[in-house]
Image 1 (cartoon, rainbow, N blue to C red):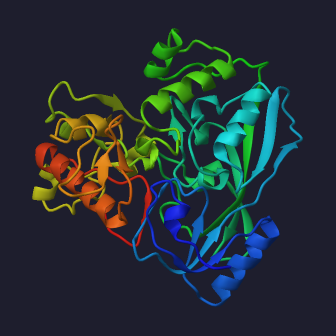
Image 2 (image 1 turned 180 degrees about the horizontal axis):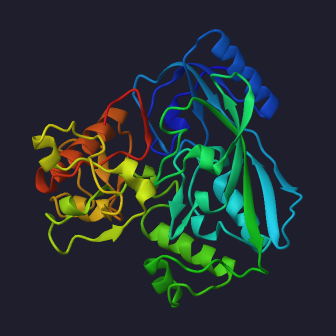
Length: 373
């Protein structure tokens, strides 16, 4: 198969061609392709929906393996009211959510509209509007590069955290399938846990509303931010939120303006702390976790930090075809014909502005290959 330009397979619409390209349609084919590549010690990159990737203009050294496996299987469950599913990695994530909502199953409805595939979802523990994958994930079937054989990894073994997991932090291999435990609630959704969603629904936090109503509202909210793919809307030619909300010590947050939004986080998120400038001055490497008390962490709003560093919606560097979304400050977009380096340059500029203004380093959420952010 002639390797295509990855700009045609990623939502940012940037990226050159790989040296080799495969599209396995079954789990058996996927295992075979990867085992062959590993035996030959050939560089490889796994591709799902292409929604969380920034690929460099020179493409990818070695092979790209685009996962095209499909299938949703309902498994037996020992617990009444529980819906246990095994979903193949190549299934559309939003297609899965639509299926669960259509059947009146609860647990994924607030994750509507997220682009990409099921296999990519555990890598960064996707989350939105008060739900996270870790709420319902049971385990993954994982082809481990080290063992060269499939293994089963539980949610605990994946070490799912805020937009991270062991799969994002260096464990190499491929997700073959994901198992979920949902609830059969006759279409009544999980308690609403996100203030913006509660407001849009006209309910209080903790209230429960039908899953189809939650999905409809989430899709509307995401569309208003350019976060639902639309070929005619350049604001959706993005990788979604380009930066994660930084987690810092409460002491570091105290140096920010009082109007800067902040939320307490669980101790398990400690590994995602970013280094404020006061730690850098003391000799800590920038971008690495800062020493902190586990009970003194807060999450900041990356969007607020960007906007208040002087980077507005629609901002673009002179002559660049990459721009901040006109709808949502967290998204960096391809306005038409942008190169990957233009997107990366914009990302570095935004990071620099926030670091200079507030002493906080923003970390990219997408996987970055062949360029630097």
